[in-house]
Image 1 (cartoon, rainbow, N blue to C red):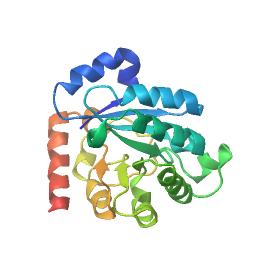
Image 2: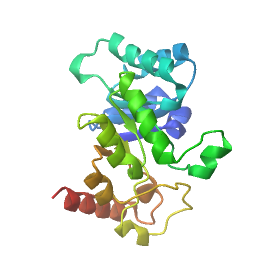
Image 3: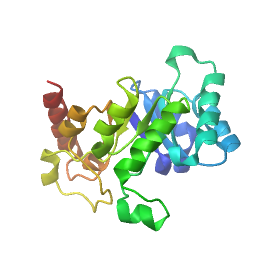
Length: 213
């Protein structure tokens, strides 16, 4: 899939989704909705009808009522088995224990992520977005069918290719994330910030293939 985040969507809007959908690979619409329940429900209802969208997400920290409203909006769209899957973002990979405590959230990122994943599952979401370091614990808590999308992927071989400064604190390699039980790997800057993006992509694909084998 191609991931469309807030950078592109803010600049180009739904027209970017339509253009990328024509490539036929599907889209992860990574807009991380977080607002009052009614507003998020309206945004999700619009997002699920955009062409090519296979995954959308909301912030699990938005709470129970917001996540339930988002799940209901997906269901009410009546798109059948081919509908986009709804994911809850747990704890951003840029956070560590100190940055969480600074905003009033106590406990380790791992503990909070598992708690939010369990809550998202109870609210009817299909899965979560979580750092690679929390995948095993979330899999144990939520079972095999619960989807886990994993950002913060930093491939072993791509480390030798120069990239811009990284602000993600909780990262891992493709192999480690796959072995932990990830369903989707989200890979951005290791490709887009590499001196040779094509070479970086090929190295990542080789590492993923090796892990799957």
